[in-house]
Length: 391
Ligand SMILES: C[S@@+](CC[C@H](N)C(=O)[O-])C[C@H]1O[C@@H](n2cnc3c(N)ncnc32)[C@H](O)[C@@H]1O
Image (cartoon, rainbow, N blue to C red):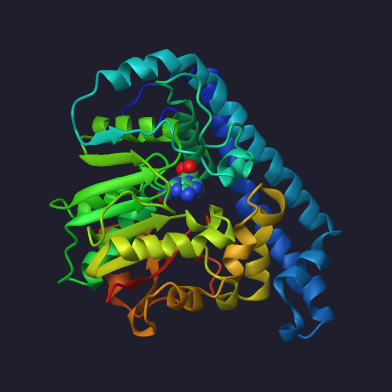
């Protein structure tokens, strides 16, 4: 798994590193597929019958399962495998630091990178090791350092065991292609990706809307350095800037699409509205704000909601549950997006289906949000996204 890097950036993975990587990836898949299925079955057959179906809520499922072996085994191994992911990728990347930096410095001139050393990185990023990632996103070991970006990319590759596709961009590819197929007259000219990390999903927008100017922001400098190097190595012109999504440094009405993926659930609940208002401000009339995210609690059944909320309890994701509990339509209205402009889709995975089956799936009636595939690392994953048009 670790040698299957398509980012074009070198890292010194030795045979032992690759073997460890393969083991951790397989362990994680076993936890998320097999152990998760056993826990679900334990709940459905032995726990759920004790109450009427409608009496269950996500927190109740959590409480009822906490003392059961199925939950404890799942949770212990899941936490352990998360920890191992970082251990496995960290050492080889530290060994490769100088090589990575030299390689990044020698790359071509696609796109740009603008860092702001004076930008305060929000406490929501610095105060914890987000999803147990030692050093979170922002820690840097020198002014050319790319370590956290490289760690993020390689750990993502191992932890998603192929579901995100060879370039880790299934979310971006699936949603960008979906928008082109569903809204054929919509052609964004300027695109902004918020909280892009290593830009893996940003690049898909450039692939699908090749004439567009694509920008991406994040608060974490080492991730942005890596993102820029990655995009250059892949010959994609993307403009990366270090910036806080709560205070965008772009003029009013300057974008046709403001996108994000897996970003909002890492924001403190109170900043969500600021991010939406800023997105609206920088959108041109007719532009779209679109977020790929975890499906909200009010659209999922109790068990599926419990399973998604697991990260909020045990994976250093302190804002996860508050985000999932948010009434998205209400938040959109509060931030100026009129009710008739809202949209929501469940998008089939481009990589899981392949081009022909995918086109057929997109043309067919849309899947329901409430399914074990939506927003999950499961076979046949589908991506939940929502947003609103700027009137
Ligand atoms: C889960 S990652 C996003 C992953 C990525 N967009 C994807 O498609 O997988 C969250 C990212 O948001 C960044 N971030 C957190 N708060 C931010 C803020 N207020 N403004 C901009 N970026 C922020 C973090 O540094 C991190 O890189």
